[in-house]
Length: 178
Image 1 (cartoon, rainbow, N blue to C red):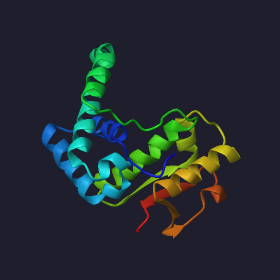
Image 2 (image 1 turned 135 degrees about the vertical axis):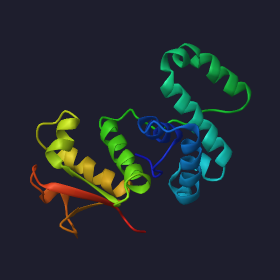
Image 3 (image 1 turned 180 degrees about the vertical axis):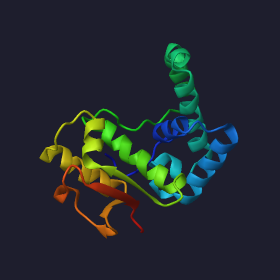
Image 4 (image 1 turned 60 degrees about the vertical axis):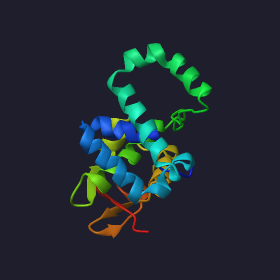
């Protein structure tokens, strides 16, 4: 995990999962750029146009993967000739799905959920990613994700440690106020 929270592909996945129309997408991207510019990867922090173009590319890709996969090498070649490239978040590590879950969770809390939090049982989270029990390795990674994405796990309004919770206890996630 790098120090930035969002890249073009991760934002595009969120837009695709929300079935946003063109106007909603434009308003959402404008809002993300204005409110969370510091959370974007470096090339986008001072280049809104490139941010919007790259996110739009990835949204189009997610909508029509088959066609884009056939043309990907030609697109990369064209971009290289123009001195441009697409910036992709590193989804190669063992827990990339969990990283992506917490990034999506942050976006949902910030831009979709009016109450400013969401709840889930630890067992449900682990089961969704194919784990039947918690291991120190997976719990350490979840803790790193919470820190990286500035998410606070709480129970009954009090900040808690995910290590101390039983699998069937409900966890409430909120965005850490900075």
